[in-house]
Image (cartoon, rainbow, N blue to C red):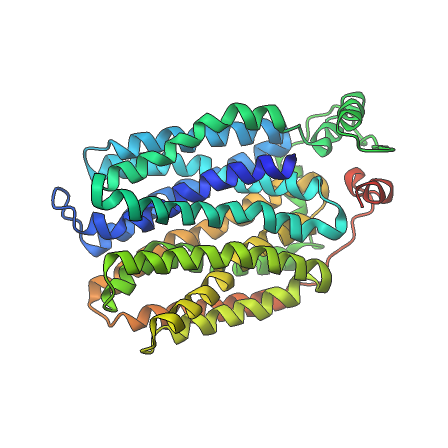
Length: 429
């Protein structure tokens, strides 16, 4: 139930993230705004800037005032603002609504990550996280499909407006989604946690009371573990690798259709590349999650970041349509799929009480990479460089991501956290 509820929220976010890439070719030809390539790249960065702050504050607040509440709030924000963006009279107003929506979009991922990891059996965490995050890729697929059907008939505004419809799912998600047991225990609400565990049929649930029951944990203490001597090196390389992953995800997601148009494909075919990019990443996320549970996150991430970089680089050469679609599929797996497994790795790496915070801060730093991706694509387009230079740049970023993951130290076992206790892991297993 938790997995499905989080999947629905991530599906809605995936649409809102992917919709700009789907309508970007139409915005480039929208005469009322007459946007330059750099302005188009900047337009893609508004939501990502909002996501930076959303992941930072909503992720941290989820560990302080409740994960369920923050997920609901984040979803309300990013769905309502999509309607505003669809009706925006100027690109500045459009960017403002995209920025405000980004606050909610950035908050969804760390909260959904923490809830999914918490309620998953230890041996299925990466797989379940991959299932949950497949909603992100499928949301981008939905954006491409809606654009293919609505752009020629109704225009880009209706494609953006569809992103507001998931607000209708909010009552269903609110009804399904329970509060985090880890959060309740951290606040000393032991009886409430036991009652919820009984309702959810978590057998033999035996939470360990915190040292200061019911005490409000200062935010400095909540995030302190990330920068302690024990975790500092891990934090640095997690942040670098996720930064590079976000450059790939948002740079390619925003500019791939436009780049392929420059390569000589028409609008419909260029959107097909975005469709394959997203579908491959959804299937790849499940496969990589299962492999990460079996072989470990680190080796799988290093291998597939490198394979993704290779796929991106090979797109610069003249190939048949089928071969290019295969390379685009590798690019999707080596960017979105790897980034989702990496985010789950972060949520599982740190102590239970800091999961939401650690994931939120890592994603917030990575949003700088997400913001950079569309802007760099716009800069390349504005300088008149050959379109192949995009692939060289993004391939180098993929290699840097692989090297950074390779530098992450082995996981430090946290035996004190109540939600990671042997009893509860045995029950969930």
